[in-house]
Image (cartoon, rainbow, N blue to C red):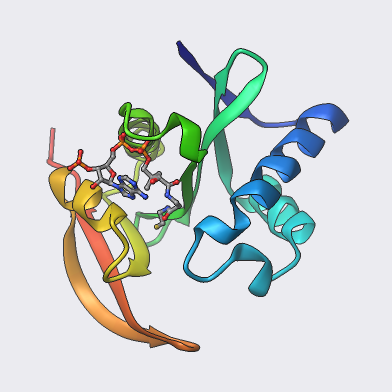
Length: 156
Ligand SMILES: CC(C)(COP(=O)(O)OP(=O)(O)OC[C@H]1O[C@@H](n2cnc3c(N)ncnc32)[C@H](O)[C@@H]1OP(=O)(O)O)[C@@H](O)C(=O)NCCC(=O)NCCS
């Protein structure tokens, strides 16, 4: 049974555990996080400007979603990271975390959600299944085949 933990002001132990989670997941990304910036700095950035939700399985952090809702002018929320440890995959946790993020973005007044990923990342299927569409293709560093995907929240 997975439980969500919203991280706002983490204890030093929580912060260390999230950093460990990110380090463990580093090579799961086509472009490892640590090639962009040191993992500790990335976590500081998320804590300062973003939102973090961790999924716990007992005492273990099984998954994580982090995102930004700072673009108040355009009301665009942006996914920073979605990751599930390999041993917990394929049970819907990634989808649940992603849906929790969409709900939080909407609550924060965002009109749409965006994300950037590699066009051949298998997670694209997950995003498409949830209604995301590719709005832009671009190159980032050595990655030629990146896509920007978007989901516009229905007006309620
Ligand atoms: C993407 C990820 C979070 C999915 O987590 P998950 O808990 O297995 O997700 P779910 O069980 O909810 O759904 C699995 C779906 O993810 C897709 N998927 C993405 N990456 C996958 C992978 N490496 N293995 C299996 N399925 C994967 C599958 O298409 C599947 O879709 P389906 O339901 O149509 O079959 C996880 O595979 C992961 O952490 N990957 C490495 C990090 C990454 O690439 N993150 C996204 C970068 S933008």
